[in-house]
Length: 126
Image (tube, one colour):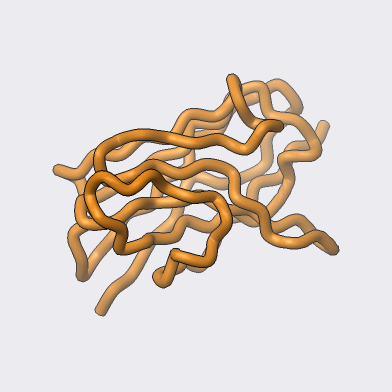
């Protein structure tokens, strides 16, 4: 059974850091592009960051320079390091997998992702 287990969310003060993890089971993460998405209350889901199978990355403008996505194929896990967190980063964060070709760049639109995790809550508040 294909499954994602997300972890690392929580409550943090503005300016703080969190590292989200997305561990896959039942499939080989290296065969997929991985994206992180978030959805805040009352807002539409948005793409935050993604990493292609060959390692290229993309970031949504508001998180550039603060968030870093990485993948450890040996551990079948993708990470999202989030620094300098702001209250507007508060949301449920989801990881998702897209069965892209190796050289295809990843996309933040969300349409091509067909496996989704259950989400982890990130709250940035003083």
